[in-house]
Amino acid sequence: MYIQERGRNLRNASMMVDLVHIVVGIFIVVLSVISFLNPEEHMVLLPAIFFLASVLNLVHGIYKIRLSGREKRKKAAAVAATLFGVCLFALSVVSAVSIWRG
Image (cartoon, rainbow, N blue to C red; front, side, top):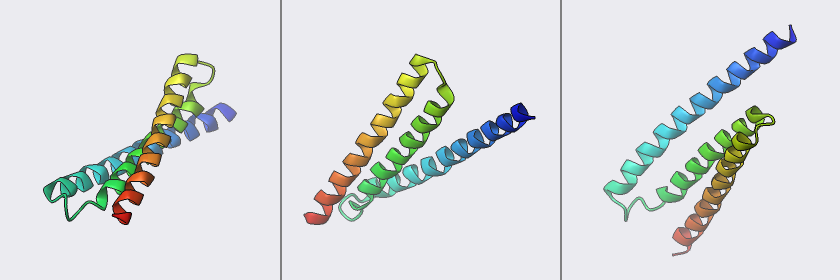
C-alpha cells in the first residue's frame, strides 16, 4: 500500500512540475515578445522575465534533487539548475533595481 501511495504522489508531483513548466514557459514567451516589440516602453517586463525563469529553474532543480536519491551525477545537475535559478533571481533583483532607479 505504501508503494502505491508513493508512486501516486510521484506522478502527481511530476504532473504539477510539468504544468508549472508549461504555464511559466508560456508567460515567459508572451512577456518576451511584448518586451521586444517595444523595448523602451516595456523595460519593466525584463525583471519579470528573469524572475519567471528563476522560478522555472528552481522548481526543476528542487524536484530533481528530491528525485535523484543517491545518484551523484543527477544530484549535481539538479544542484547546478538550482544555483542557476538563484543566479537568475539575483539578476532579476539587480535588473529591477537598475530599471526603477533610472
